[in-house]
Length: 193
Image 1: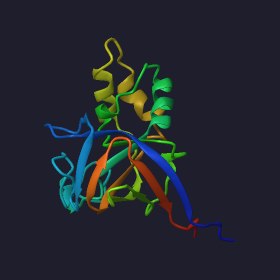
Image 2: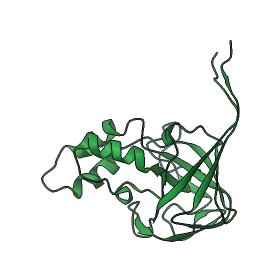
Image 3: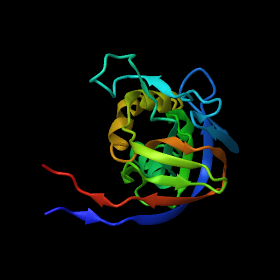
């Protein structure tokens, strides 16, 4: 028997925006970003392609591949859960390379691939999938917490199912903090063999 779920529509809010326009993946808060077909203009992850890394063991590291990671999307609700699990007052989403932080989208990290996020300007983000936590992001968080040496690997455990999702630009536009987000989840069927 195949388990089916019909199309769903949700709504949320964009509570924070970030851009990684420095040397690495750590991002800084901004009020507005501009999206083109290659991602966030000026961001570290902007471009039609990227190099493969540890998350693509089927390719030799550094292989040029399609960039499906134009944006990293996290939720306030899941970030609060991670910060509680790590016993830190507040988790700075920029330290783990966030671009968007949402509010009001239940179980954001479980949103299935192909989901679309629609913004008032007409911009649309298509979700590629879950963004698994890594110790590099954990180390970035740990560096901001004086006297803590347990966060580098603790983050991986604490964020195991709540690290957010990555997506790519389906339709360009400008996005602002406070924008409403309309979410369209396509019909799903559980695939098994």
